[in-house]
Image (tube, rainbow, N blue to C red; front, top):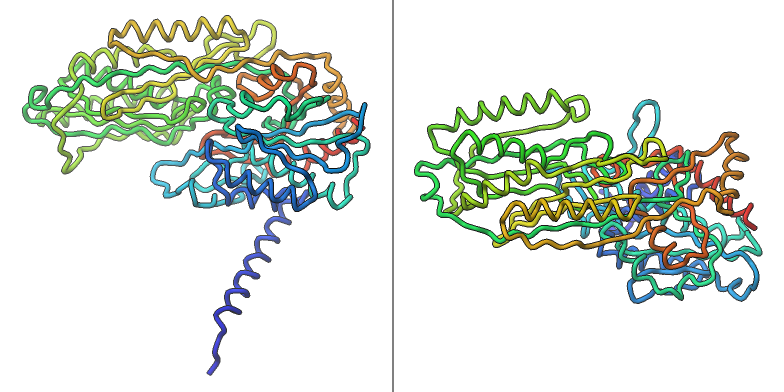
Length: 522
């Protein structure tokens, strides 16, 4: 008879798992340190507003590697060498990224972002290997930046890399995804005296970003007007109308791709149903974030028992019309109507609220409003119908407006305000989270260094672009106008959605570029 020591068995299993993980990481290619750090970050909760644990991880690792750290009152973290800070008249390069991630998951996926590690997996698409997460966002935006910087710290510590006499600092900001909070409220002494700033938050490995749109969120709060269900319908049957399977995506960089908006589809169906049938709306919910195109929506409504089958057929006809327009772009769209068993509710929207709300949502704009007059294929101004939430006493509608032109941005949010007021629902309107754009400078010194470096490494010209999304560079440039800035990174697709994926091959490409650029800046 053999007796197995449970402690030794645990050590054996743990060691075997570590060997397997190490082998998988090696298969992802160089730099190995990047993949080790990325895997560790994926285990640490870091949704927007909850970056404490990941900040502590970065801080501890930096100090273990011999760097000094400093945290400002907003929660931004600065890491710098303990050796070269007293050097005068030398270029100071700041590597910058944000610590938070967009936390989105598919309907039905069981995942608690406050404690569960992301389930990483490698998939093959069109001959390329991609890293993704099962059923959730991957957080490559911006764990990529964190992992790059930590890998650089490790090699600087081991003397595998040296960039003397360059002064290198690393800035990690908080709450980028919910209004660029860290950049807005940064302690201006934190990165004083910088020469260049390298933002590691772009998502295409063949281009540099040197400009971005400014934005603002327009929010409408409607006080609930209740009506007794018995007053609305006598033989009421509750139905659930749900929309799932849409691509969603970033409300800036994906806004021009004709992806469907779940709230717009829902409002179209409900408006037509409300026009033809006697229905009573109980709740309407869709979307989660101002900077994401909503992928899912759900409404609960009541209809007369005798009209259930007729109404279902009517909705099926509308769904077929919708699919004709977007089935190529949204092949996984799923729209369902089902009777809810055991649902008891005594109150619904008042007739006034229901009619006016559906009128407003049906005509509310979503998508690109205009294209840039000088830069081809760049959205100039847009608006995103981002979310609608039914609370106990309020309905909250969130929209976001973006533009590379401050006046156009202002005009767009003024029009949204006018539309909300036209609904005549006594809506409380607020404009929140405004951030500035970043004017592109095609003659900047840092850009010239970067272009030359890219050409040396890859024997091709890099694409120079401005983007229709907000970047921290816009705010940091406002705070530190004398610092030259550029944004770049590996290829990430499907950002801000559970379809987010990181192109594995591009990690080493942009790592080599980063190292060579720092060498050229010495």
